[in-house]
Length: 75
Image (tube, rainbow, N blue to C red; front, side, top):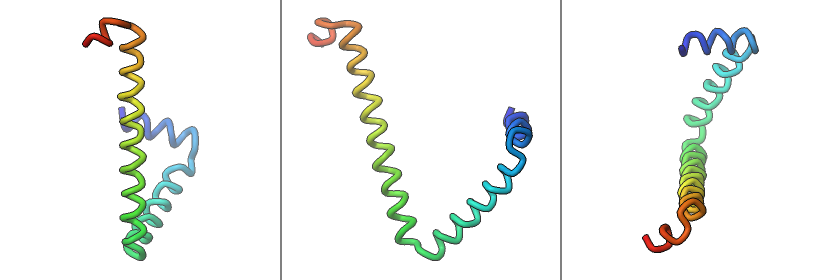
């Protein structure tokens, strides 16, 4: 399936793989050239991930409360 996806992406956007490769190379250079910024970037991503996970948990709790009402409150 991954191969088929890659083929479809190539058909839809022929320059995609080249741009991805260039972005990857630039990112690798950036990490080597400025490791502190790379660490900051990863920390920011971790913070964003934690925020998304908290939002997902809150949404699940709200849905459970909406669906089960007083039973949810009692639990």
